[in-house]
Image (cartoon, rainbow over all chains, first blue to last red; front, side):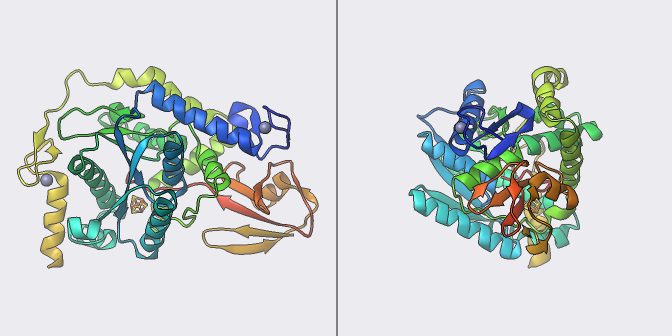
Length: 301
Length: 69
Ligand code: SF4
Ligand SMILES: [Zn+2]
Ligand SMILES: [Zn+2]
């Protein structure tokens, strides 16, 4: 197979684009997709700080790598979930990445903030580990950004992540989740920062290839709780559809974003309050994070 | 030839001197769910792997339900 751009032997075939690229031309293709995402959704400018949420995996470190090279002012945020060896190793990868590029990295530990690490939260709440984990991550990302006066959080969600989330929402017709699914969520309250996903145009294969070509030392092992997650089952279904019909995932996600999403936007938004306990934004009186941490602290102490 | 698989890391032996896509088919791996690494480079599905070579098939899928960063 030959590179579409220069005719050299190709390193990666992108069937959904009906193309193959050599290494340098793939890296340029990848960066162009990120530039297009940032431009199209006015995600951030070079004058503002961007908090990049990093997990030590391929997506978030690939994202951080591109943003640094593009000249953005970035700070990394690693959330230590306390998930056995997985957390120890993924944290080491993030620290190594930040040190090699001389960029700042903030580390926040769920065990300190919630009162216990994710595996203990799971046993205390008797809910799936991803539930307490996801809630804590969303909360802490926003709070850390506010504390450091950073207006925007960027995450490494890719096209496959977004397509799998959309698939899950549609399977259950989650009418509140559908309008919130977007590559860029604006701030709707002074205490909510903007949230953006600059890799949403790139597939998992593409982010993995980029990380490999850039020699990023990312953690290949998965979180031990990922195996049972329904999002993984959805990804497997979508991958089989993609193999049978290249571009299926892309058309599913982009068709929704371009054409269907506006139909799901609610006429009136929900009322946002500040949590009586911590001051972060909630639709109730006490936010879900404070309730979780109360429950955990009661049981752990 | 040797094939390295991940999560958990293990090795299997398969017949070489054929295309990557045939090896993927034999192992029942959906193309585009793995990076195909030969030496220090990525190769495409039509690449012919010699019998004395080793390739790594590294899964690209990741993530759980909790909005992974
Ligand atoms: S798989 Fe679940 S528990 Fe593991 S990091 Fe992702 S959201 Fe958290
Ligand atoms: Zn080329
Ligand atoms: Zn609160």
